[in-house]
Length: 81
Figure 1: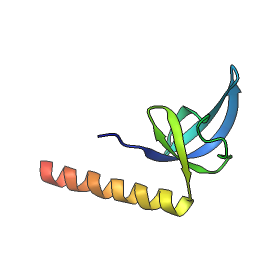
Figure 2 (figure 1 turned 180 degrees about the vertical axis):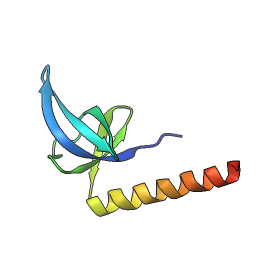
Figure 3 (figure 1 turned 90 degrees about the vertical axis):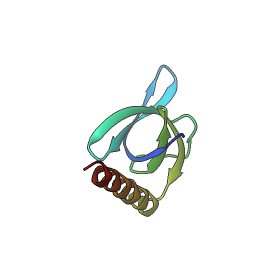
Figure 4 (figure 1 turned 180 degrees about the horizontal axis):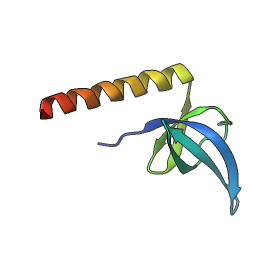
């Protein structure tokens, strides 16, 4: 199963002609390729899979998705106890 994770664009740069962004995943920051999301701008939320932003999403959609992922993690931790 593949999973795309929402993150917020906090910086946009160009590296060797490639549009890149620093993405904040709840305190964890990673460099991600933004070439597949040319419409993405600073402050937008993007879904990231395997180091590439594959789509943009609204802040409310991102927060809803992150809340659901946190619930899944919580349920998994409960089942392991």
